[in-house]
Image (cartoon, rainbow, N blue to C red; front, side, top):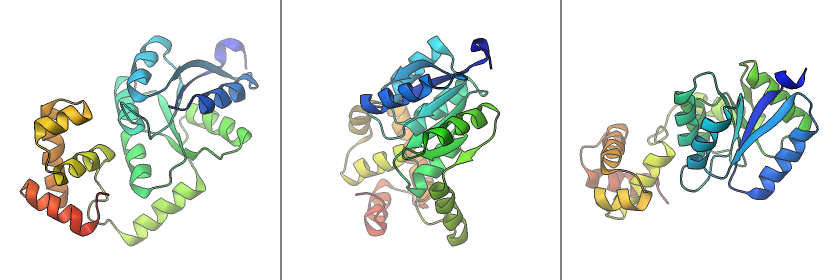
Length: 213
């Protein structure tokens, strides 16, 4: 594959050491080209506009904007973009959120270098890649069926935790650095998914079912 045909890859991870390791890995593959790096979701959106990668390796737990929200925003901007979630976390809800947001793959950070290179190439071709651990989590979830709160997004869980603390919409907006209208949307979604009609009921149910820490 010629240089002009190299797959353009962007790295998004809040740990500099991880980005350094991944950038070194990319350098040894002639068909993979590192075109940009970001340390959080917000930065990823800005870097994306400048470099327009083919594939993004996306961490999920990051400050400012998490990887799920960043994935959703990036895929909305460019439906042809391929995002691979590359994380240390195996939680069922997080896996489902990442895939629902538009990620084409979900891989764990202990993946081998050759397997990661193959996953990037597969993603570029439009083929999904899923870590065996993640595939098993989803398989078990389908057999068990959905549980109350399984469909809450990571952001909705953050909002729910603040509701449990007794925070108002303006206070939640300030804590999470989002608009009050966005908070209102999240609250409405939470009430609907939990099948309750008030914030008090949502808080009580969250505590009963262990939906928040």
